[in-house]
Image (cartoon, rainbow, N blue to C red; front, side, top):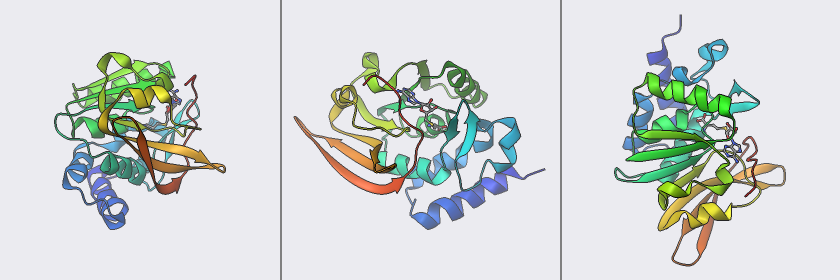
Length: 210
Ligand code: SAH
């Protein structure tokens, strides 16, 4: 039987801290969320591996380092309302729940919405709301958001997401580039936005109308 607590500590030390995830709030969020509760039964022994893992329906739970990097780039504050596109397993949403006031998370596959809701409820997390929906159109009713995190690779920045972001707010989004993705930070200003590319990565595709 694997010692999950030990595996989690090692993941934080080796995969996160040594690669420059040093924000203490982010590290304690990773400390408090057991990743093995978000991984399907058959893969549970790989939960803390340095890789993405299949969660069914051709989708994946992202590599721990990527979840941490996106979270550190977003830097959610205690009173923030954050929109996540691509709930998947619910792991990223659970991490965010420890760092901000409220998380709205959208997932296009209803089976994964059930999976993620179950995972989130095992931890008695109350500040995450998961909906079935096309995330490229955003979720207007809780907008504008302090931050948006897109966990699937997009061809371009969905304009609905820009308009649902607060001026001064940030969006973290992988954008398609020659067959892979560039993890990008988009900062919204009063009437424009600026992009900063961080690293190359590979995500499952964002599929939607927007
Ligand atoms: N954040 C997840 C990983 C997500 S993988 C986690 O922590 O486990 C990307 C997810 O985005 C997949 O579940 C996929 O079904 C979903 N997705 C793709 N296009 C989407 C869209 N337009 N709207 C909502 N979800 C979408």
